[in-house]
Length: 334
Ligand SMILES: Nc1ncnc2c1ncn2[C@@H]1O[C@H](COP(=O)(O)OP(=O)(O)OP(=O)(O)O)[C@@H](O)[C@H]1O
Ligand SMILES: [Mg+2]
Image 1: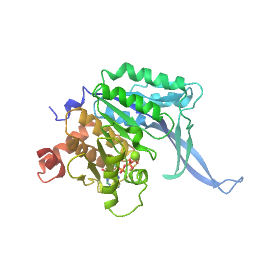
Image 2: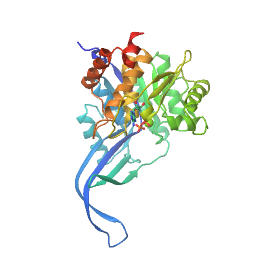
Image 3: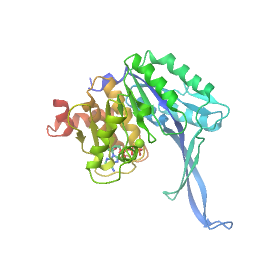
Image 4: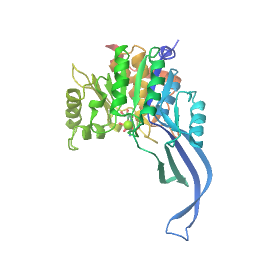
């Protein structure tokens, strides 16, 4: 029996901005006669779950069950998103469909393997009262059986301050831990959360600090603990790893594990998904962060995927436990 088998009976409510990641692959044979731009002839198109939908896909990859709550339009892209989710064993049936919105789509045009341009279609308007009520309804019908609430905020209008405080209060009433990947400048909207996971730039901006040396991360972590009303802060730092700030004790730093990276997008999604599933499975915050760190280190080395699977994590975990001097072995020894 694997040490991560206990992930499998966990149910995680994922609320956030869902989107469709679309890729148009092609080649360039000429410059347009209409403007000095290349003409890309599309030879293939692929799509994948993005934003909160990618977080949910990571949770399913880890063997837990995500209940994905968010809003899409009534359009072909919503169907593509459902198809992408289905492939990752995530149900799209808890998503709300709005007749007045369009599904958020990020289209990457890739010619000869080179990313040429990205085209975004998004409508960043706050939810209407009816839309908000629909989200709260689905949420309320699942909260009693959930092990954790994960908020995946991409600042696309779903998570109004209003909705956030309602959802966090409902979770806290039931002693359900809340993990939020934050956006914006005012993190007090996540007050009550167990943990927020900004990256370095986001944390620095939210604290109105200037980009500087390594101590700026330490300063930001402490400031967020003081001002945001959250219990813990995990600041991810790309190739420099991540640092956990708790109410008591020194900052706990984890070195990045990846040596060579191919695609770092989506690493933050893997971090919050792994952290939430691990913490819900009774690993400590430190152990859960260490697992999230190896999971993210693995996905950034993969070409064409930003999802961690439980078997892969189990293997990496076992290997690092074998090396008694590894950070994860040390984290699990205490
Ligand atoms: N270049 C890298 N080298 C090694 N590890 C990396 C690298 N980039 C990311 N990671 C791993 O992924 C984690 C999260 O990365 P990062 O801090 O870039 O998050 P992020 O900016 O939220 O990512 P994104 O928003 O692109 O999903 C890091 O803490 C680290 O473990
Ligand atoms: Mg991020």
